[in-house]
Amino acid sequence: MIAEKLQTKTPSDQPTFEIVTSRQFQNWLTSHQASLMFTTYQMGKAFMLGTNPDQTLHVTERTFSRCMGLSKAIDNTFWMSSLFQLWRFDNSLPPDGKFKDYDKVYLPQAAYTTGDIDIHDIMVGNDGRPIFVNTLFSCLATVSESHSFKRVWQPPFISKLVPEDRCHLNGLAERDGQPAHVTMVGMSDVSDGWREHRQNGGVVMDVQTNEIVCDGLSMPHSPRWYNGKLYLLEAGTGYFGSVDLKTNKFEKIAFCPGFLRGLDFVGNYAIVAISSARKNRTFGGLALDDNLKAANTQARCGLQIINLETGAAEHWVRLSGHVDELYDVKVLPKVNKPLLIGTQKDEIRTMISIEQ
Image (tube, rainbow, N blue to C red; front, side):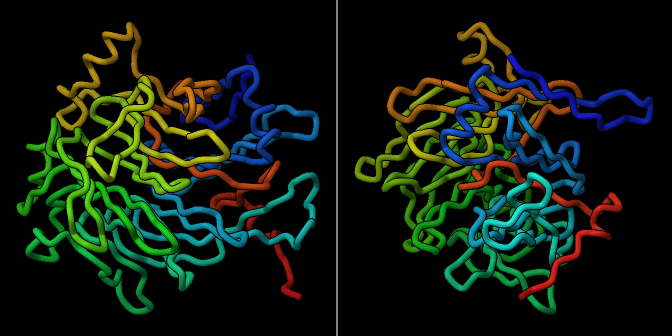
């Protein structure tokens, strides 16, 4: 077992969290020539996990207030949401270039100020512009050059574009560069009305047709289209699974010990982000509680690496200490050791590159 302690300090000058991985996790990263990035809005931290040349785990963490949604890394670029901004990160290294022993250096090159609209999932459209879940206004939106956002789509039952988080629209699956499916906790058209539907009011909706393709779900999150199938997380029960679009049924693949948000894939594996369940009215009283008791375990915080053929969690990453909740996770393909540059340290002042 390999542990990596991150020396982030609290006011009492004590480490705030620790990362521990399964024994073969680094080998798994290397075999897939991939790194992982994930966010915890609770602490306002964005993480990247990669491997050093000696096959030990390398961890980068940087501070961004309430960082949540992540887009896929496309052409050396990805997007990340924070408290009131949407950030674009770009790799500043040339092809096959190196900085020390880093093969990618991601800098925050641009940011759109959106206001605190509670951005959740993010995708990049065929035109290169981000499309994101605007949870506060119950719609999909994109960035604007002169305003907080521009509406792209909203559920047909939402009667007004108002900041009321009516249905808790949270997840977005893309397909061929277009918004394909969304998840929401409840089909409510009143302020904060989704909370009454946490147990079994969750739905998956087709963005192109406005049809419900799966219902009766408990707090669904993170729909993803991968290899011709629609996958999602049922956070209220702790199950990762897929939607059969012929029968409109949710088919369970694996139980994960935690509240599920954040999903991506590489090869024949799914990477699922799990959180320790909060003891409040949003997280409490769900079937997840009974499922954890039945498995004789407690909710954890970290990542589960699940084999899609067997449903087995072959590898894992666990966070302990002050980190209880994650939101999103993404794979960085063909990246061994990435470096994430933040805005809080002096390093951003000296990271200067010239376009050729």
